[in-house]
Amino acid sequence: MLPDNHNEFRSDTFTTPTESMLKSISLASVGDSVYNEDKDTSLLEKRVAEMMGFEEGLFCCSGTLSNQIALRSHLKQPPHSVICDNRGHVYVHEAGGLATLSQAMVTDIIASNGLYLTLEDIVARFIPDDGDIHAAPTKVVSLENTIHGLIHPIEEIRRISEWCHANGLMLHLDGARIWDAHIATGVPFTEYGKYFDSISICLSKGLGAPIGSVLVGSKQFIKKANHFKKQNGGGIRQCGMLARMAQVAIDENLQRMKSAHVMAREVADYADCLGLILEIPCQTNFVFLDPLKNKIDPAIIPVIGEKNNVKISMFRLSFSFQTSREAVENLKVALKELKEYADANPYVSSKAVGLYHSGNKGESN
Image (cartoon, rainbow, N blue to C red; front, side, top):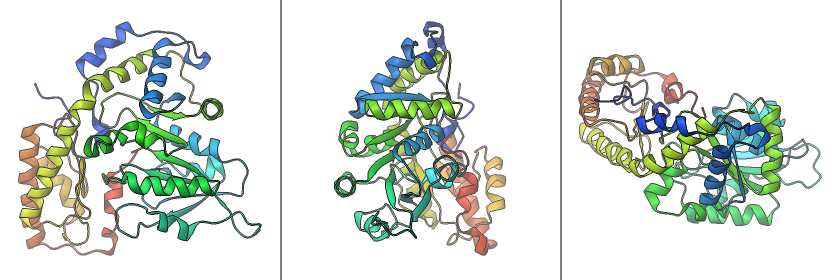
């Protein structure tokens, strides 16, 4: 029997707990994790930290919380600013958390290569702490991997890391989809980890755990981050059930995530054969159709999707290990109909730019 989300292409946040994950709840510890007395939570935090090559981890109820308390912990005294990609979730999809929680300015950068930030992009927008009272000096650089399904090459991460640390900047990674970057490249998690001061790793995107992200960093950093976690209402008492399910998700579902990449590549190639134009290359589990060049009326996308029993909302198509073969074939039919509809009824609107954002809500959970 197919899972309810087998035809879900709106986001990989729609992955759901498997039967074995749900059954594991009965074995979960029931200690108070706010007092650091829950066994399963501690084991999960330790496991993810070690996977990434860090001293300690901190379970958070969402990626928004883990990202924002990480950045808040790195930022000491305003005025200060954070450099990030203009598409970055920490900037676009976390409800203005940097301004509200960290009193930080954001220097958002459009990647000059159209794919990922380079060292040259960052250096060009860096604001030094040189005594200029008119500016908010850069204190943190925040990268994202993957970003819109695109892989940030490890060689470029290395260059950025070396420059940041030589200039006294902290480097954070929104690694919500670091699982996908690892699967696609084979780069070890610890190789990514050694270049960052902190990483946020999502457990509910793609992996299928119901809730949570783990923030990893040094012992001192995690101690301060836990303070901000509590301050922002993130303390979870009996967290063992969530942690136990996340452990099973890592054990069983990480190896399955490659299938999402294979299906996405298949659909990307099919879209290309239809004459549909991709906005960016398909490198992992996403396919982005260009919202301007394809001349598709966004209002018709969910209508044609529903007709073909697939859930699509905008120009971004997301795949997971729970996506079914039946749904992929139905999606192809829907894409063919969308192409034919656009050819007969070309849609032109200046508002089309960035339309995929309205199908990209709540990505940090």
